[in-house]
Amino acid sequence: EVQLLESGGGLVQPGGSLRLSCAASGFSFSTQAMTWVRQAPGKGLEWVSSLTGSGSSTDYADSVKGRFTVSRDNSKNTLYLQMNSLSVDDTAIYYCAKSRAGSCYSCALDIWGQGTMVTVSS
Amino acid sequence: DIQMTQSPSSLSASIGDRVTITCRASQGISNYLAWFQQKPGKVPNLLIYGASTLQSGVPSRFSGSGSGTDFTLTISSLQPEDVATYYCQKYNSAPKTFGQGTKVEI
Image 1 (cartoon, chains in turn purple, green):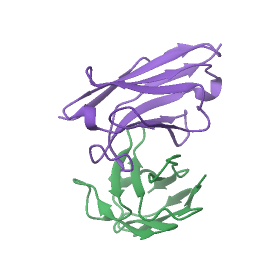
Image 2 (cartoon, chains in turn brown, purple):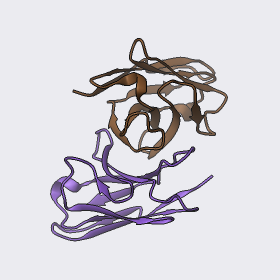
Image 3 (spheres, one colour):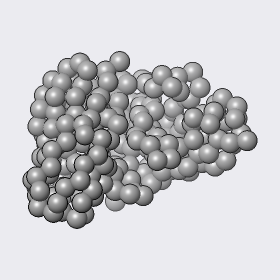
């Protein structure tokens, strides 16, 4: 069964840092493009970042560029999101999701994790 | 950046009604358009990709159409389990923007 399991969320003060993880199983992770999407409480979905299967190419939303870094460890089947200089506007559920078609970077997201909540508050 | 605009933002319909949701891109995106359903408290679920291809396991009452800038999600006969918020997303290139969502109620 294909599964994505996020972890690492929690309460952090403004200006702080947090690293999210997404453990993948049930598919060939190392060839799969992956994406982070977030959803603030009561709000819509916001695309955050994507990266290719090799991790050599990444993209970021303007709202997180320069503060967030996406990476992966294909030997551990794990995707990461390093979040620095956090603000209250970053409070959200963070989902990881995989591309529908293997290494395809421009493909829809077919499997999503359950999400991990990040709360930025003093 | 390309903006994705959904309409309406919410709608109320009766069981069995035909429901149509529109998504407009500010520039052409060919058919790189997906539709997601998110039920309250749940994870988003892929319904349609490539603007019109039904994801495996999705009921056939859902359909998508369009290309370029104008897209439509149609529920041919609304069911109680279709109460959800629906989102479109462009995925041809970054930023892979979502529409603001359409809340469907009975």
